Amino acid sequence: MANEQEQLQQATDNLERIKTDCKVRMNALQAHLKAATYEGQKAEIQQDIDQLKIVFDRAIERAEINQTKAEAEYLVQKSAQDAGSAKLRADREEEIKNNALREWVRAGGEPAQFESAWPSIRQSVLNERVINALVGQQKPDLSIKL
Image (tube, rainbow, N blue to C red):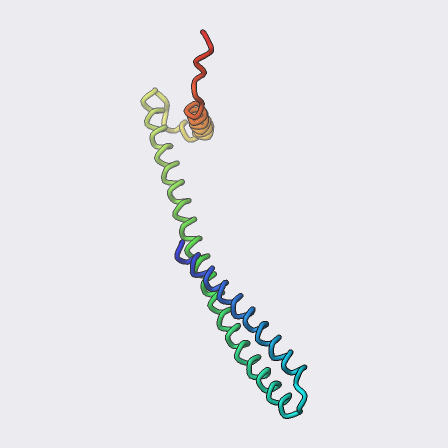
């Protein structure tokens, strides 16, 4: 995904550079047109402006197409990565559920009743993980005497 993200950023940067270059060049030609004193000179500068506009319009159009393509590739890759992450989460939850079912049966529970108990078991597992993570982050206060 990093590669697609880099390509998207490069395409966006390229489009902005082209637009900036176009503005700078057009402003310079407009200034020359204003400063021109002879009609022949003005006609040449106007012709340059018209040609530059055509060239930059095409360049901007190609850059926008490249940017759109890079964005689409990035979104496809991101979507695939998100789907992969969701699959990993689902697989992990299925593994936890299967482990819980084995423990349920080992403790004498009926497999048929497990499905209705699973939501509360799942919540208990999550609560336990959060508590364990928090306890693991805290450093014991050795100044407290029991």
